[in-house]
Image 1 (cartoon, one colour):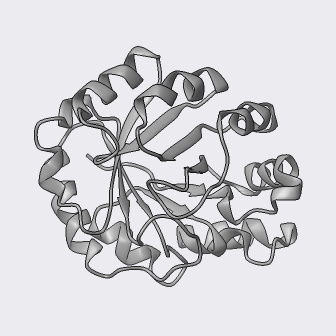
Image 2 (cartoon, rainbow, N blue to C red):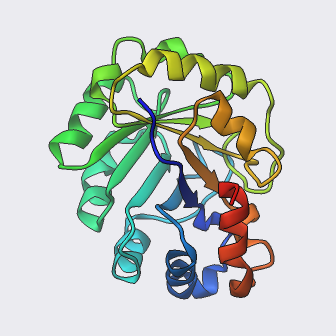
Length: 219
């Protein structure tokens, strides 16, 4: 099933002193989703933001809030992020003891459910939860920091996941080092959602956001 390419700028690369303005700017510049990276300093070696920031940003955009939880354990926080306004919640396959239960809990909250795979995590971990998924997020860098270089081996994983998805209505997203130079190869491998941080925000010059998004989209 062919799906339209979606660009989901990661606000991890935004100016944190102006987050509301930055979200409005990328919304106006052509972003399809707003990607929110939540990090706990435990599962990944960095700390970012929590559910309160998601709630504060929700009124600043009409686009879906694509919330990526790089936290462990994750289950106890799912309700908080759902109530804050998340449209999609993605958890890492290793972030709890029972992935199937976590995905059921997200969907029971009325939110789309996703799983993120680290570079070393095989796609086979999803074999028995495919029908619980709305989104698969392939990490093409090791999670925790923005500005890293794309890991080429993940192109093979993307292609394998596209085969696994088949005709299921599951979005296949890629996060990490995605830019205008490699976006076409990522899409060719099978992705239909491109998460981009520094490639969109650059030096936080709002006048360039629309052009940056268009370049990643291949326009």
